[in-house]
Image (tube, rainbow, N blue to C red; front, side, top):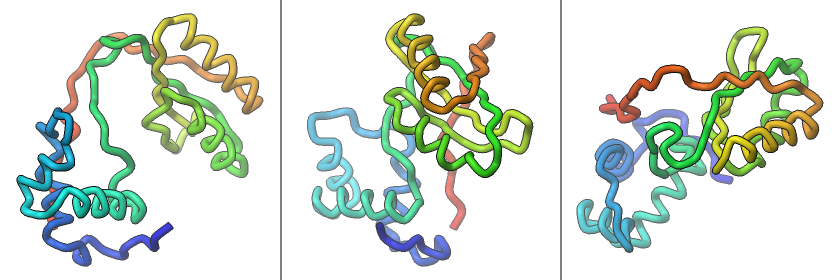
Length: 158
């Protein structure tokens, strides 16, 4: 894994463009990387290599769509109370499950939070049962009661 950069000032202009300009309206096509290449003036392989490098260095965690909650299956927010000494180990177990995203630590009795998605309610319950069995800790299921749209794109300030 590449060493993380110490500051955003070390980013090339093309990296800044890739990070800032494609948070919205990411091309949905057979060749999205080529579409990005066409818009940035570099070739497709360079786009892929730069995005992989940005991910390895911790500037991005993933590239993927955000769908309206529960429009393609079901999902829920989950909170767990994990001893600090086991937090990284338990987070790694949880992250190994398909459908888990937004896994993060909070300063609270329930200190590990994540969102998990599945095709059906039964599949979701089975996944949570499996996580409880694999970790030895209880999952507190926190289903959404009201839908809010939060724009996850930010104008990055360099």
